[in-house]
Length: 428
Ligand SMILES: Cc1cc2nc3c(=O)[nH]c(=O)nc-3n(C[C@H](O)[C@H](O)[C@H](O)COP(=O)(O)OP(=O)(O)OC[C@H]3O[C@@H](n4cnc5c(N)ncnc54)[C@H](O)[C@@H]3O)c2cc1C
Image (cartoon, rainbow, N blue to C red):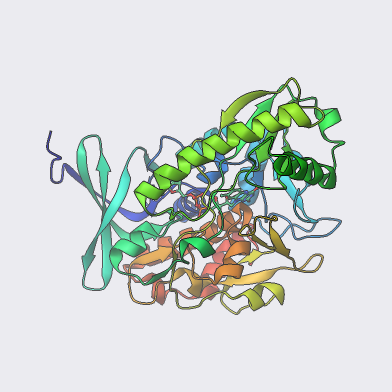
């Protein structure tokens, strides 16, 4: 069967590619501004890695006790809606001195459906964006592959929230991507049920490390790491496990990514076998779920008008065109010994400039989420979901303003974006 050339054309004000925390937040905020919005997602549900791979919002609070909230607006709306429908668990992060919010990922899928539905966002599921339409240096739309063939989608402004900068890359925006060996490790997560959580929570991080090291040294288990996260969830008897490590493969190369999926699941089963045999509380555990895809921490990032730098993060730098706040530590999963963490002081946060979302050479396009312009270390902080949703709120406002004026996102003043974000409870 030959793929039809272009089976339909549709036109909107703001077109968001990718329905992860950044894209779903962008679509919601743009619709709140009154724009006609379409979101295109390759899978059949929203939430991105937040429903495919994990279940904890980081970056909602700055580090330290008592926790200081550093994002509002869309992320706060999402947390409130989650709370209405299910139990949330506010707990200490397994890797840093920061409070995080654990939720039920299946409920989050429904929360995004409802929020976007109520706001009038058109969501096109099961559509993979693979190319762009350009007029000169301006992106005017995208092409998506669907079961019915290729669909052409046109928009006043396109927002790339694909996580991998797929749209920007296709449009010719220069992107940085470290070589495979320098990229953060990918990880397949899994959930266990029937865990004796009371016993399991008494196993300290140090004790777990010792047990994992013994298991590796004796050759009894082929564990990919000597440390890992066993995270409490709001669900009785359910623990989320983040212990796998897949390296040396490029997540933007389909062959390598296919290999990574297979290796990740294989590692997950081995980690499960270890936990059941060696760790208190897991003897009766059963495998409930393996993440629906491998988690990609790092891939392409765009060259934007500003590149957020490691020192900006660590010095809690503020910018005149700051449109969101980040407060998560630099969390770098490259070493086999475990994550490298470098945090900000208690209650501190840095600003994220609007310019990080604006590609250097292409108009009509904003890039949001983990593909924004940043160096390796700044990216290792800015990529968490609370921060991605906050950036998404600002991107949605900017895209809607630009589309309403028939103007370029580059011409929108950050001061105006800031004002609109704050009006809806966001923090800049
Ligand atoms: C193992 C692991 C653990 C993590 N743990 C945490 C944690 O505990 N807390 C936390 O806050 N963050 C965590 N993170 C980081 C965080 O989840 C991500 O960085 C964040 O989800 C990025 O959001 P995003 O919206 O930019 O991208 P994504 O969440 O990757 O969303 C991108 C969306 O776009 C869709 N898409 C991609 N390409 C296309 C295309 N071409 N066409 C159509 N749709 C497309 C995808 O299906 C997806 O829905 C973790 C990451 C990993 C890998």
